Amino acid sequence: MRLAGLGKAYGSFTAVHPLDLTVPAGSFFALLGASGCGKTTTLRMIAGLEDPTSGAVLLGDRDVTALPPHKRPVNTVFQNYALFPHLDIYENVAFGLRRRGIKSVKKQVHEMLELVELGALARRKPHQLSGGQQQRVAVARALINHPQVLLLDEPLGALDLKLRRQMQLELKRIQTEVGITFVHVTHDQEEAMTMADTVAVMNGGRVEQLGAPADLYENPASTFVANFLGQSNLIGARITGRSGEDLLLAAGDTRIALPAARCRAASAAEGTAVLAGVRPEKITISHRDDAAGIPDGRNRVTGTVADSSFTGVSTQYLVATPGGFEVSVFEQNVERDTRLVPGAEVVLHWNPAHTFGLDAAQDIDAGTEDES
Ligand SMILES: Nc1ncnc2c1ncn2[C@@H]1O[C@H](COP(=O)(O)OP(=O)(O)O)[C@@H](O)[C@H]1O
Ligand SMILES: [Mg+2]
Image (tube, rainbow, N blue to C red; front, side, top):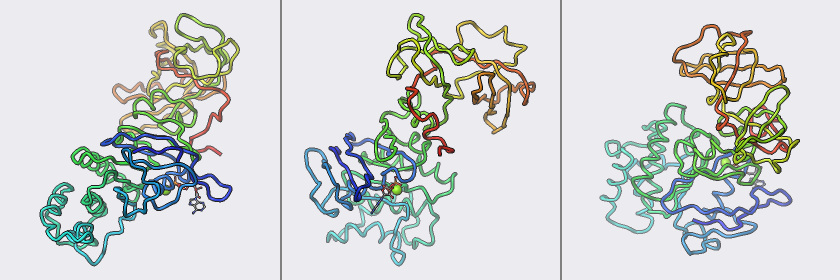
């Protein structure tokens, strides 16, 4: 599927800026972004439910922009599954075939019900199923039409967390099994990363960055992506020089080495302001008494534990530094250091290779929960 300059404006408000995007056949693609960033509008344009202001939707070599929804080889699954309440599960799934005048539906319906593991519940009515089961019926009902592309608009939004996690794996399995292109819309970054081969991060009607989940996570190109996808420490610093492949930065009294190849600031010249980024799980926290044991060559920040919260798998520390910035650290609960309580003096250290550099001319809080 290819979107070529596909855009949508409502009057003077641009909901989706002209978008160029290629989704390889058979892949699982996620559109990720906060509420209002234009995800549903994009899906509706692909489905033909919304006329674009500009651009085209192509499936293979075929331009489908002018086709009405029912003539496009595309089906949509919405958050409110909209099953027919008076029909049983079997008839809900058979619906698309019957509407097209197909008489012998039995084999196909059974195959679909097996695919979503609901064969035993074929004669139940929708209200006799759980939310997750109903969602699987909605998927079966859409897939039985053999669409080229299946669009899913926050299909798991109504489910509780545990069921949502289960359904993410289930949908991924179904997609792998049928090999149909899935375009999945979600505001949940973990969901997008778990399921998709490729994630497009949307912000304000634009795709900010697109890539494989691990690549986006490790190499965010903007503060928005760094903060929206997981968490990042972003430290305001200046370039003071260079040592081999690394740029040397200063943030107050703190010295930070940053691989030059990972710096996305406009310039690598001395004096340039950059944001030095590092993910909380890449950092090790050591009590100050153990500082002598920290190997040479690591980036180091000294500070005081301001807060610690135990979350089971890990403990999350917030460390205040003399430079005025705070650093968040996730430490796996293997051997917990009981000295690391609020007020403890610590040294944080990490492999310089895990540092990324962002242009400082951006909102440092973009994509965070308390972004104003
Ligand atoms: N019919 C419409 N008229 C005017 N504005 C709209 C309309 N539909 C959506 N919008 C606006 O377009 C933006 C994107 O909406 P939408 O695509 O639904 O976002 P998302 O699905 O990412 O939450 C929002 O600001 C929304 O208010
Ligand atoms: Mg939406």
